[in-house]
Length: 292
Image (cartoon, rainbow, N blue to C red):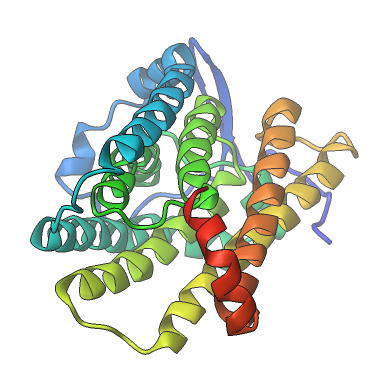
């Protein structure tokens, strides 16, 4: 269990017109040129003012996706092999770079500080980690493009796919308003898993079919990510109930737990259906799955 002892020497407080953020005072060994364009005050203002736009984007996304699905019903699937390969490779490279840069702060905080610090003291809002946290939130809009390839190629569109894309977008923008400390875990895990997942997808899009065990491991990794999210949410709740200083509101925490719990259930169900269910039963249920 995380130690409840807190000292003002353990954290710094960053303030802006939108509020304050308690963070770990970590300084990167070096800053990339692109990271020097970072404006913490503007980004904090932007997400506090416009985070609700993510809800409208998510709703519009769901409407467009299902409209395109109906449009494609009587038409031939698009090939899109090369564009899909480039798309996945681009996201894999982005996720890999982000894992490396964001990971520097993550490894320092998780590896050298108590658990309390990593789940209750956020990243430095003026640091490269915050730059990549913002890139993470914005990338959730770009990743909606994944569904375009699924629909236009007439591949099965399961509920988990579009629900996951829409909900992660909304939550990441909401969490960006207060730069939730637990987001350090969520962002790093997502970048890391996506760097592997999109690399796998880029190979399959190119026509290279990796062993089935690799696909199984990636799904297991995704499922583990959701279970860790649930565990962290429960840990933060326990800390906050003791009136311990923690950079995450109860409203955001409740949303976080609900989302990760639903993801955990859906991913475990998907893992069972894809890798553990007897093949005959799986074939019988497959048409239903395609219509979701």
